[in-house]
Image (cartoon, rainbow, N blue to C red; front, side):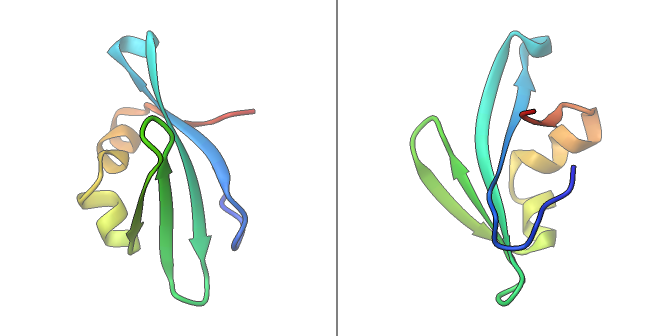
Amino acid sequence: MKLSKNEPVDCFIALAGGMCRSSKSVCYNSKEKVFSVVNEIDDTEDVLTAKELYTNSNIGKAIDKGAFYQYS
């Protein structure tokens, strides 16, 4: 997956073996060097550094498990 600067990318985490999805919109702010993650289920937003994105969100675990995808 390639994130372009300041353009949101629609992604999801596959849950329950792919039977469910947790949809997210991820955008990288190159000026601030942070990721904005909008959780589509409840429209909440998290602003995270690269390290926080990987360690303080469920995205890092999903990446490690091969369960983080971009909608095509």
